[in-house]
Image (cartoon, rainbow, N blue to C red; front, side, top):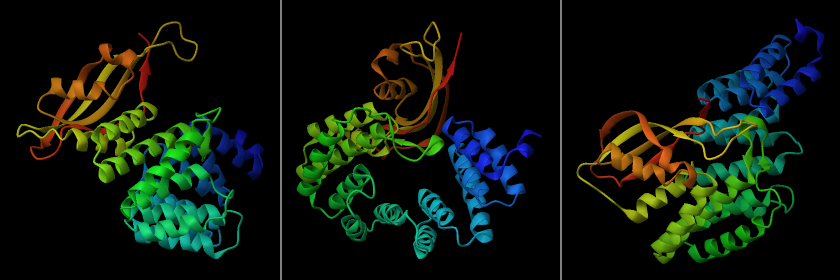
Length: 334
């Protein structure tokens, strides 16, 4: 009943606020109310909420409905293009982003940046670099541009240029006063400066490893990246690649760990317990635990134990190590 007393504009602001607070179910309720009122902002709110809940196919389905009903809405086309890109549906992503470019709007440079990111993911580094070089300074976040330029330069085997750009960008970024602030997005889709800095370290490490064959320096960058964001897949790849531990007994484990956090959080008096999940290739569950511990803060490592485990398949020909870290922790009080 309370939704009925609010205008469309008020509902939209409430939806954004709920996304910012990670109240994704609440955001979905707001989005459904906006949809009842036949307002296109419903699809933005619903898409972002489903994406935040880890339901990307549902998010795409909602946005496909949105652009079919509001084909002139460039923001929905851009959002859909980004979600297609996340799902590696690159042809559809490119088509959607080009539809977003067809109408004049103040996000043109942002759409071009997303197109450059798409080209980077789709192994089209020359096109990615051309777009990144064409972006007007100051219209898009320079940190995002640097991250994907380093990637493109590395793919083009221009390793020293990639390393030099990463060096400069890391130095400038570490002078930031607030590394936790969002660099782009809001709520469930926010990406922090800290996370992007981690990406820079991982990409520099990759350029150092591929270009200079300096495994020690590459690992330093990889562990720094994982300290900033333990879910960084390129840093995890770098650790596995440099260490290159391959065993005929390797198995792909899916493991749920229980542990105790190293400090109280959110005003609690005692550190809470937590669960966190990983996928890892190892010879045994004990080795898997030791490989995972390196990805967790030093203060929690001694408390970690395996709560559940599953062997998904044999992996005798792939490097041992972490392949995936779950998005977040599930905290609990005793």
